[in-house]
Image (cartoon, rainbow, N blue to C red; front, side, top):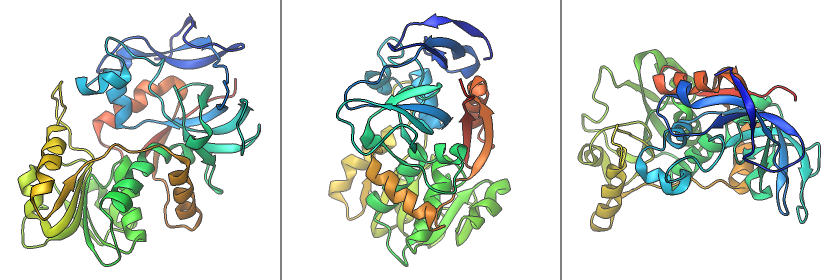
Amino acid sequence: MGKTGGPVGTTGGTGTMTAVVQERYGAEPEGVFRTARVARPAVGPGEVLVRVLASSVDRGTWHMMAGLPYAVRPVSGLRGPKLPNPGRAVAGVVEEVGRDVAGFAPGDEVYGTAVAAFAEYATTRPDRIAPKPAGLSFEQAATVPVSALTALQAVRDRAMVRPGQQVLITGAAGGVGTFAVQIAHALGARVTAVASTAKLDAVRALGADRAVDYTRDDFLAGRRRYDAIVDIAGNRTLRDLRRALAPRGRLVITGGETNGRWLGGTDRQLRAQLLSPFVGQHLGTFIASEHADGLRDLTALIETGKLTPVLAGVHPLAETATAVRRLLDGRITGKLALTVPAP
């Protein structure tokens, strides 16, 4: 990915910057991403320009990169990518604020989500960023916005986890999962975390009361019933999940993907939502919202020591394809960050 191309006029602005560029869809990151000098984005009214110091990759990065399943293309672009790169998470310093922006000024350290964040500069709205948590590096902070917001909304807002409840979290060692385990633990739940053999100690250290190795044990077998199941990386059937759920329990499906090009495994989510009105259990899914209120809630958890990003590694911006490949391989625990050198 280290090749540098000529200017790509995808954005307006003054001067140029280094950015990751994606000009077509493709499932293999090494064949899709390259670095190039592109026009630096101009800040418009109601926008904030952030000097990006770090970003991160997540499963959504691959979906936007590949344009798969096809259901994402109304958002990502029907025939090709709408945006120059799929980066979303950002941690950095405010460079400039547009007209009608209050609450932020140049020099402020922030984190949140932005447009085309795999670059030296990215634009965003003030309602999608918040002050960076004290004590976190920019690389750590960049792992929080997408994955931890998803975990917070899944565990607190959708599963409605309360103290003393029995909660099952699949995919507990992944980017969303490592945050979900900690958030459920902070809410006072008894957490059962599902992970592979090599990652069991890691999820216990995050606060799981019980860790189950899915390569050796059927985590849905037995008589244990859960008040809430957050299914992040499972591929078990809806019927199997319901059998392990309490009669009035809540199932939140946030993952569990297949190679299907049209729905990519989201048919489970659709079936859950269709069935939910007719059974005592609450079954469903959601699309995470990116907003500053959630970021401030996460900051409070971080600064009180209840939530800590699990940083699996840091890659320079020029190795974005390598980071996505490591994510797809599934052997990391937590999140991978990208560091962006000074222009």
